[in-house]
Length: 204
Image (cartoon, rainbow, N blue to C red; front, side, top):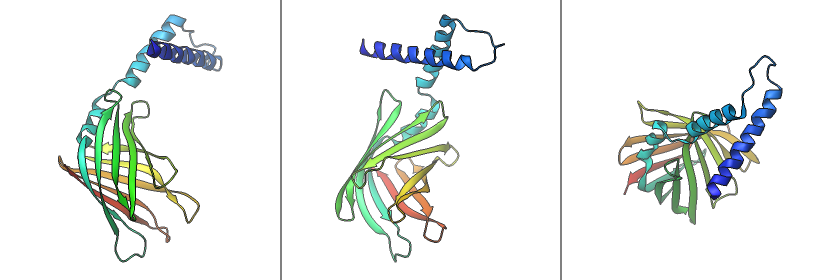
């Protein structure tokens, strides 16, 4: 019953928004009846809410993984290395992946939580990320290349020295069914892009 009430409220709001938008549309456009508008809204909402082939691509990510992490700092002679574990599972009836990571970073216990999915409206893959090493919420949007089995995302990383966020990109490639590599790139102090992090995933 609760879900029915929520969907009813959403449809009512959508119908109201469509009515408001129609005030600004061309006077020559034919008016839609309330029944027609609700039918069209139902059809579009179903398309928006239904997982498809683009979601199934994410199935390769599902499982438990061991992580080998390398953090690179400009000018540092060697990367900082750490390990962790990662579990990825479907949530919301196959609409999103939930990514739970635990490990250690700079001598501290690390925990992170991410989500990933395919937005049927944007026609892009979208991810979010939070962890106990900061207070920001990361958001990334990207595409998938089936030929190379690679997701490429645009995102922003915190630059604490600069006091803000800087553009970055994440490249996640399925090497095979049991191995994946994620690399994150951003601009260094000289303005040139460098790889700031690399994570090697091995299926457990």
